[in-house]
Amino acid sequence: MAIGNQHTTSICLINQKGGCGKSSTCFHLAGTFAAFGRRVLLVDADPQGSISQGFFGSDAVEQLPAWDTLAALFDERCHHIDPEALIRPTQIDGIHVLPANHHLAAFNTPLPEQGGVMQFALRDFLEPLPRFDVVLFDCPPNLYQCSWNAMIAAEHVLIPIPPEDFGTQGIRAVHQAVANARVLNPSLRRLGHLITRSDRRMLVHRAYEARLRDLYGELVLQTTIPELSAFKVALACRLPVQMHAPKSAAAVVTRQLIEELTQRIQSRKLHKEAA
Image 1 (cartoon, helix red, strand yellow):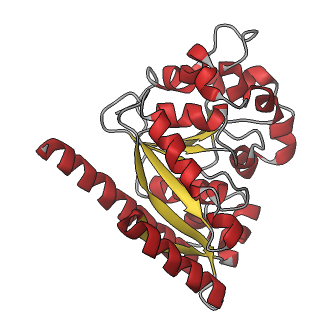
Image 2 (cartoon, rainbow, N blue to C red):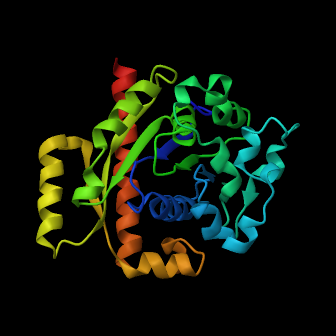
């Protein structure tokens, strides 16, 4: 495994497009993993700080100094980083967050492969930490230093894709970035494409989903995430949907997603052991 203990599951969510559901998926997945008794770390690798704001509120997050955020890992002025100070517990038992805000933007540079030791900042920070069962990385809508660092630190890549034209653009670039990252992190694998923000009443959404499944076959997860108000209402209450509305269709589909992800990860481990 790329992170610490061999029992840790680490997944980074990546796409070049904004608004495809990366942050929302991370937020609600964390809640469902925690409801299953897993100890979860959310790494907010996006300068927008959506995950951090989802748990702590925008005012509190925006006021954090750089040395109290993920930016401290990249800033030479931040010495003697204390993991206990950076990683914050949330109001949800079992969920911790490594927060981010606008301070991270200065370090999210293009051409990350030329970043020297900075490429390993996240990996080196996470490796000695006490074990988490699940680490989820929320990445910005680009393939710059923050996304690159997440891929170097993680074992799996999940690619959220809304079933529309803009959402499906740039997928090949994401695949190429994963292939490039595997030079430094040979354990990294694509876990699959996750169709998000789907409305099956719309012919165009059904058409794009069919096209994605045609192009990528089993790489596209069977579980799709529909556009449901329960996700947004739960987020407004600063709670994952599993805690806010556990009987809702949104909570049910998130549990289904975790089951499918777990099956894929276990299958990969079995194939690896057999090899």
